[in-house]
Amino acid sequence: MIGRGIRAISIAIVAALACLAGGAHAAGGVVVIGHAGLGRLDAATLQKIYTGRVIEVDGVAVTAVNASSGSDVRNRFLRTFLDQDEDRYTAYWTVRRYIGKGASPRELPNGADVIHFVKTTPGAIGYIDETELQPGLNVLLK
Image (cartoon, rainbow, N blue to C red):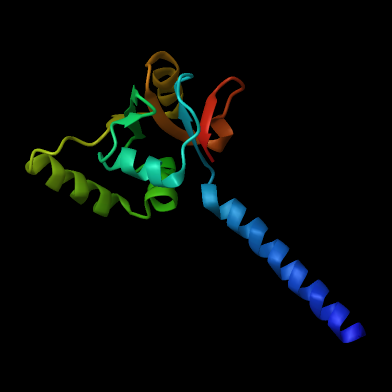
């Protein structure tokens, strides 16, 4: 009986640690923010937006922006939400542009510029490091 209790506690501890590790890893320290008129997003929709396969969400035209190429926050965003690295993402957009399927989202140099663009542009979506999160920002996905 005691052996079963210890086993149950061990399983509960392992499950709790897995949840904590998954939650910490899931966002990679990146927060997706959007203009006030946008609602929460799921990861699949976010991926479609940043790969140019969705240009409207709930009837609102979206304009995605990226952090600058090679930046730490962009690398974490690509890895966490798009399951890509910089080279794959750039290659993807090079092909799409070549075949006439659009251009990659505009790049902004820092989190402050992303925040300003998102706050002042209807339909804008961007991402920032979680340390740059401010009260009043519309968080779409963590």
